[in-house]
Length: 89
Image 1 (cartoon, rainbow, N blue to C red):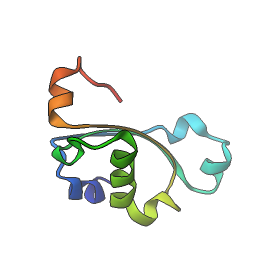
Image 2 (cartoon, rainbow, N blue to C red):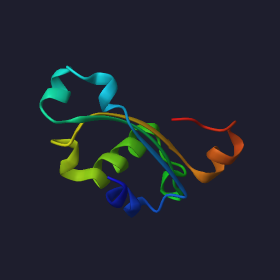
Image 3 (cartoon, helix red, strand yellow):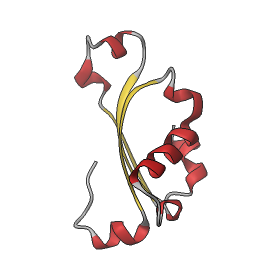
Image 4 (tube, rainbow, N blue to C red):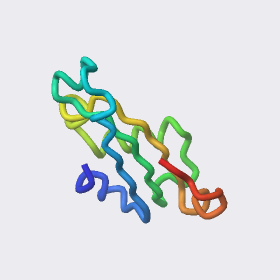
């Protein structure tokens, strides 16, 4: 996942695997993981939240259909990240 997200040239990338917290969940049984993502990239500047999520999903490609069951995304521009109080995943 990190390799795919590198296409967005992030200045910060935090990816947390929460799959263990969802043991027994239908998505976990089928092999799909649950993840939280904080990504900061210039590509997000001036983009809507929806467009940012679409950029992340496009970068992850087919992983969104098999390896990832759930993904919580916090996508910020560098300016937003520097002006916000320490963003957390």
